[in-house]
Image (tube, rainbow, N blue to C red; front, side, top):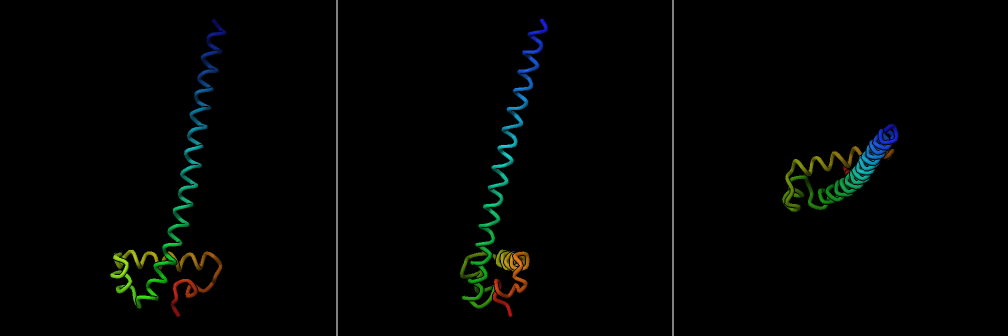
Length: 98
């Protein structure tokens, strides 16, 4: 009977290890996807910044891009933050402000 108990214990351990392995794999997948989303948001922020420069101001860019002004401002802020975090030191390089 002790053999059966050790088999059940081993099986429980194996099931737990497999569950933990799957959980870690999912967490890793989510982490990678979040990194991709962040990169895409930064690219979009830079593009929105360029659009503001081309259209002349936030409101014109909002209309031209069919994007709420709040979203335009959020992306402009994101571009500024990224420029300062990237060590650029001067957010005007990304946002086009002087």
